[in-house]
Every structure is written in C-alpha cells, then in structure tokens.
Image (tube, rainbow, N blue to C red):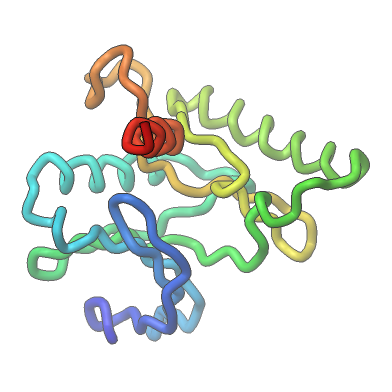
Length: 177
C-alpha cells in the first residue's frame, strides 16, 4: 500500500485510540519512516481531525535528539497521516525492570528532552514507558504527542478531566464496576 506517491507501507507497528502506526519506506529519499494514520472512523469528525493535525504541529516545533522527529503531515482523500522518524528499538515498558546503572542514563535523557520541550512551551502529558523507545545503542526517544499541550494556547480539553492512558484505565475500571 502507498501513502501518496512517496511512502510505501511495510508493516503495522501498533495502534492506539486515534490511530494506527506503520513502518514504511520513503521511496524518494530511501529511508525508513513511521506513519501514523488517523483511524477512518475519526477522519470525518472535524474535532478529532483537528486534534490529530494539532499533534503534528506541536511535534513539528520540536527538534531534539531524544524526541521523535516529525517529517510531514499529509491528507489523502478523507485520511490524515503524520510521517515521522522511524525509531528502531524497544519500548521501555518491555525492558523494565532495569538495573540502576542502565536506568539512570535513560532517565537523564527523558528529563533533558522534557526540559527542552517545556522550554519550547510544550507539555507532553502522557509520559509513560510505552511512549519511550530505547534504541540498540542506548539512546532514548520520546514518542506520541497526541495529547500534548502548548502553553499559552487555547485548551482543547476541559479542566479536571483525565486524558490519555490514565483516562483509558479509569474508563475500563468503571465498566468492570
């Protein structure tokens, strides 16, 4: 499957509430990329599509070695895509528990990249081991700015509401009760 004329989908990497992430190849630049596709059931919902595009704009503001680099945002028909750096590695949640000597350098990288993002006015708001990729060389990359907030911008969420991973866990718990 092709996205536009430039990106060839290789395989699905994972999925979340709003989208599916694929490993792909940029056939023009001959490099691997990751492509996040807004789920088709949301693409016609203007609010959700705007939130997806907002994620791309927020991530595009950031250029740091420990934050996944955004390359472009595309629309093909009713479908929206975010094209970003492909990070080969293992999500931190699959490596835990880690010995202190291995954990400390990773924690420093997370804190350094969060400090950078905060200095750029961006709050991630969903830092968790699933959103932290560790490369074979030991570098850490923060991913998924889906519920990030830009300081000074209008709020897209209501105050005192829970979003992201915690919101999903609360919803599941309420269903069980």
